[in-house]
Image 1 (cartoon, chains in turn cyan, orange):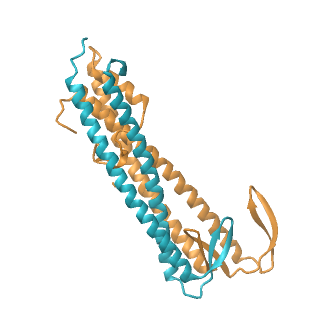
Image 2 (cartoon, rainbow over the protein chains, first blue to last red):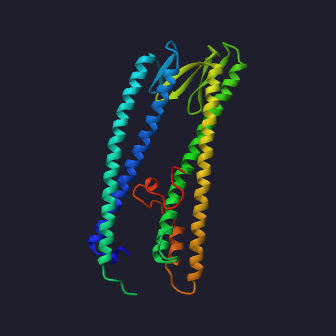
Image 3 (cartoon, rainbow over the protein chains, first blue to last red):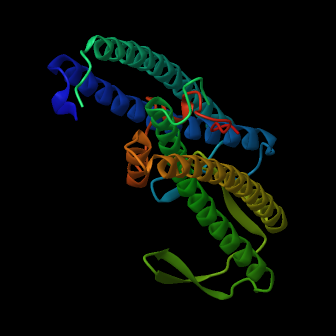
Length: 120
Length: 180
């Protein structure tokens, strides 16, 4: 079917597909970070509920190392801040892709609208 | 679903796009449901292990898994404490009873999540069946002549996911969004 389309539209369609792939990659990354962020948040809340003298471990590779509650909470909060920042960047990226996608869709619609009707 | 005339090429196209989007959502949900099932199985194993600890004696011989179905010999040093993973690479030592309670609560949360996912899946399934029946109706109507509906059935049978650039984040094609 795409053989009947003008090269310009074919090119636009290819760009559209590329944008869709980019969007999917950004979405996958975003949802992964979002999950990690929620997990970190839950861990901070759980640690804050725990008494100061509780025995706490931090996993490093396959082993668990004893850790101090205050230091660990601080570390997790820093990690969460970094993830929040990355999420913001990704949301902006997502918006850019979305707007480019809509623009391109409109262009394709216009190009197809200008095409002479096919016979048959 | 829109102001396009029933059975028109545009309407059939919209129905196919909606169907494919629902299908992509359903596939993602099925993956999530199997993950929650695996999590529940893991929690069940942990709860059974704690139950078994209650009947064990300190110093009892044990086999501790080291992965790939391999074990090393160990002795139970304490049956009063269990170290629980709370996520984000953090584990907290808890009393056995507390740990068991936490695991049971976590299992209930996961089960509730799985139930919700299954409910959404059910709704998606209903919506997909509705679209299929509309397309089948158009196909029957068109069998006397040539219609886009005939092509539509083939396209739906092809089952290719991905309708919008952000799939589930796009305004949904029908009443069921990802947050439903």
